[in-house]
Length: 196
Image (cartoon, rainbow, N blue to C red; front, side, top):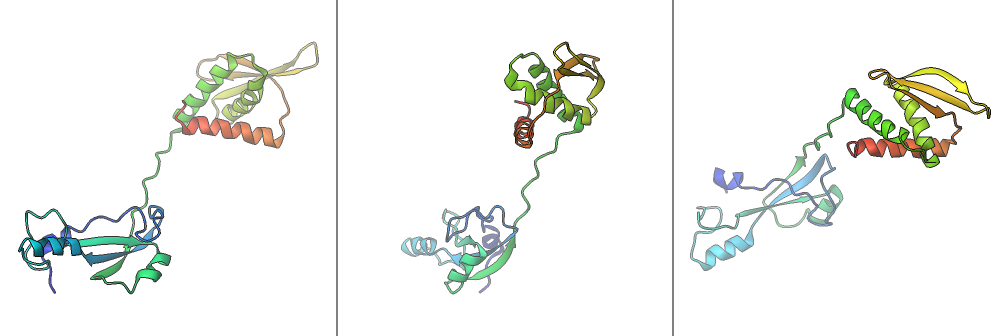
C-alpha cells in the first residue's frame, strides 16, 4: 500500500520514554521505533462516513493516521510480534553539551568566591580558603609571596592577585584527603551553579 507523502511527514518525532517500560530513551544513542495504524482515527473516520486511512486524508481530522512508538532494545523483544506497519532502528541526536566556561570566567568566579571567603574570620572557612588559594595559584590567578611565621610558630602563606595586586594571607593548614576532596567538591558545585 502506498501512502501519501503528507501522511508520512506527519509522523511524530521520537518519544522521550519507552512505550512499554516507561524508562527514558533520552540517553540511548539508538532504539527501535514502530509505525502502527491509528485505529482510533480509523474508527472516527468510519463513524463519520469518511474515507478510511491510507486513501485520502481528512483535513478536519485532528487524529493522525499513524502512531509512532519507541522502545528500548530489551522491550522490543517483547513486542516485536505485535501488529505494525513498519519498524526501524532510530538514531537519537546526542544531547547538546553544556557550554564550557572559559578560563577567564572560571578564574573570575573563583576569585569572587575567594574574595568573599577572605572577608570572613570563621574557622570553618579555613579549608576552603586554603584549597581555593592553591587552586587559583595553579590557574595562575594568584602568585605566591614570601610566607611568614608568627610569634606562636604558626606559618602564614601570602598570595597576591596578579590583576589587582591585592595581597592575602592565610594560615598554612593540613587537610586530610577526605577534607580536601569534600572542599574541592563544594568549590566545583559553586562553579557548576554559575557562581551563585
